[in-house]
Every structure is written in structure tokens, then in C-alpha cells.
Image 1 (cartoon, protein in one colour):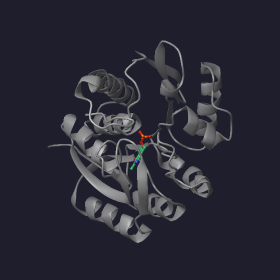
Image 2 (cartoon, rainbow, N blue to C red):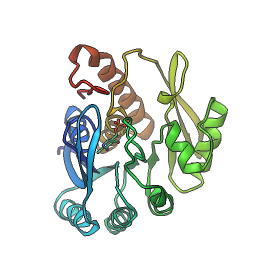
Image 3 (cartoon, protein in one colour):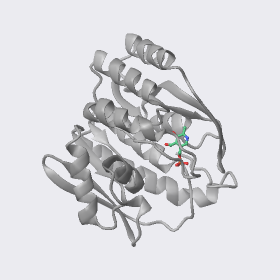
Amino acid sequence: MTPVALTIAGSDSGGGTGIQADLKTFSAFGVFGTSAITAVTAQNSMCVAAVHVIPAEMVAAQIEAVFADLPVASVKVGMLGNADVIAAVAERLARHGASGIVLDPVLVATSGARLLPEEALDALRALLLPRAQLLTPNLPEAAALTGSQIAKDEAAMIIQARALLAMGPQAVLIKGGHGTGRQSTDLLVDAGGVTRFAAERLDVGEFHGGGCIFSAAIAAGLARGWPLAASIARAKHFISRTLAAAPSRALGSGARLLHP
Ligand code: PLP
């Protein structure tokens, strides 16, 4: 049977991030993608021009419709928009005993647009972090969620990942992509310890959507039944390949688009 994954995220009219990137990524992994849209953004590769958050009841209704009909094997959670949507998503995921939840704590777009207000951070920490099999913060997101400075080295990354782990997710993948150095190293921290996933840092310029594609690829792996570490390793390979191919397939004039 074709594996089924659900993405709960924002729509990006420009097709580079959010729901659109997630569904393309699911397809690339042979996974049937379903969606619950939390916000509609008017966006392209350069900027987020407008955001309309969907009423929480409508987000809940979409999740309900999907679970009522389809065997959802994993869930990627991205942009949520506000605390009411966070509460509705947490409640529906609990009601359906959802597993394989990959939570990408989307806070601010590469262009600088705020995608989750500061006052919703408490709801995200309290209601959704404890439901996640995996939390996938980048360095600025890990700093915001732990109330710390942006980590400058691996030791600081591990301290922040452990602080996040204490908030309830089964594992934390803290992503080094926003750091410096020849390697872009992500650290998986769980009860078993620390696992490193390194890739050569690609000097291909600024692209957006990478975080969405990466977390969707991990969720796709979980939907296929791969173990967490294998899902992360294959997703890392997938995003590296997508980034490496991006300059020759460039679309968009701003922070440019990736094609998963
Ligand atoms: N817009 C939506 C709907 C998203 O889900 C995200 C990312 O997670 C973004 C924008 C930001 O993407 P980026 O920071 O890659 O521009």
C-alpha cells in the first residue's frame, strides 16, 4: 500500500516552501501527500507580501477529514500562524493518536517575515513539542525556543538541544545550516546520546524552502517505515542533492527556489 503522510503547514503561492514544497517532497519519496492548510501566504522567492491565518476550526476540520479516511503514517508540522491554531492542531493530533510527528518550528522566513508571533511560543512549547517524535530547529529557532543566544559551536548546540528535549519531544535535530565552516553538521540528540549528520557546506548562494523540504523528507521516510536515523540520513542526502542542482535550475529572482 502507498504510504500516506500529512503536512500541516502554510500555503506558499510561490511554490518554494510550505505545503507546496512538502507535497512535492512527499511525491519524490513515493509517499501520498495530504494537507491541512494553516495559513495562506502571498509569497514569491523574494518576499512574503501577505499572510492570512485560517480559523482554527477550519484547520481542525481539515485534519479531521484526512484522519477519518486515510491511514496517516507520519505528520510534518510547519507554519502554524497563531496560538489558537497550535491548540487545535495539538488537540486533533492527540485525538487521533498521530505518530511520526516531525515538528519544524517555523518562526521567521528567510526574508525576515514573522510567521509565528512571539506570544504563541509558549503554546508551541507546551502543546506541540511534547507530541513530536522529532523537533527540527535551525540555530535561530533553537535560540528562540530556549531563550538563548544563537549557538556558535557544537557544545552550545548540544546544550540547547538537551534543553529542548526536556520540553518533551522524543528527539531533537538541531540543524547547523545557518552556521559557518566547511561542513554543515546537524546533531540528533535523544535519550541515547548525540548522532552527527555532516554534509559538505555547498556554496550555491541563498535558496529558500530548504528547511521545509528537509523536514518533509524526514516525515516521508518515517511514512515509508524507515527508522528515524535512516530517515534523517536520506533526507539530508536529498536536500544536499536538491541544493547542488539548484543553481542550474534557478527560478525566481530573490532568495531563489529549490525544486525537490
Ligand atoms: N512561508 C511558509 C508558508 C513556510 O512554511 C515557510 C517555512 O517554513 C516559509 C515561508 C519560510 O521559508 P524560508 O525561510 O525558507 O523562506
